[in-house]
Amino acid sequence: MKKIAYIFILLLILSAAAAAAPVRGLPGAVNINNIVASPQFSSSVQMILGIALISLAPFFLVSVTSFLRIIIVFSLLRTALGTQQVPPNSVLIGIAMFMTIFIMTPVWKEINDTALVPYQSGKMSELKAFDAGMKPLNRFMLRQTRENDLALFVQFAKIKPPTRAEEVPTYVVIPSFMISELKTAFQIGFLLFIPFIIIDLVVANILLSLGMFMLSPVMISLPFKILLFVLVDGWNLITRGLLMSFR
Image (cartoon, rainbow, N blue to C red; front, top):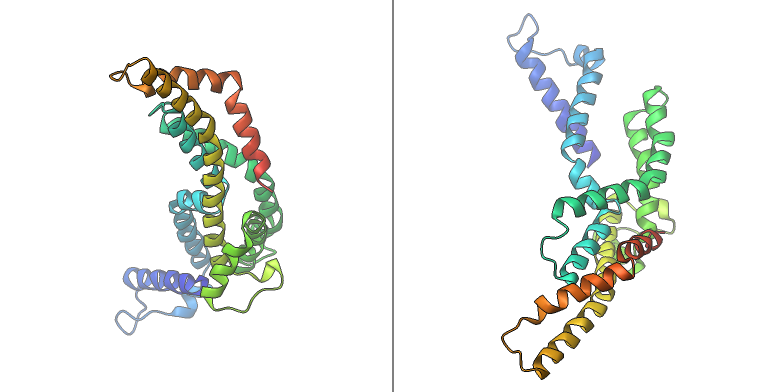
């Protein structure tokens, strides 16, 4: 995948150079050695890679960080409360994003120390910096990944079963991590639903016994669910549980 990306970038640069500055002699000819050796070549590659990384930042945030689990749990919590659009999506995404920054800061600090700083000082090439930077991220994802999810993608990737964590390819780790996060988030969401469902059942039975068939049980139970959530300091408990769920 990385080789294909670099070849594609090289072809883009060469085609742009051919259109902008053809070499004298043969029309449209390009001196490849001069282009590769020029300092503009390295800066152009860095610029294209930077633009590509910026465009992939939201996808990267959702796929390989703790954001996926947090935002799903918060969404299920809002559904369990029955408050519809309260808190709004922007608030939930903001909370999830800053919690993700808090959880992932040690990983990003390790990536900065082992890959970014040596690369910027010229001690490491782009490929080596990329490999070094992915190792801390892979270790974080593997700590959250279940063995059966990882074994599933290892089996379909048709690779040799790895004996160490460092031997697992990144393209196998990421989907395994994502489906593990989905399962964990839904397990937490199921536990969140239980007390609110009990309140709905109690309110519905009371209204039924009083003969109030036309009155919506959801409208009556909503204040009690909010009251219960506030009394137990629900946001603190859920945030604490989410932080403790990451290894």
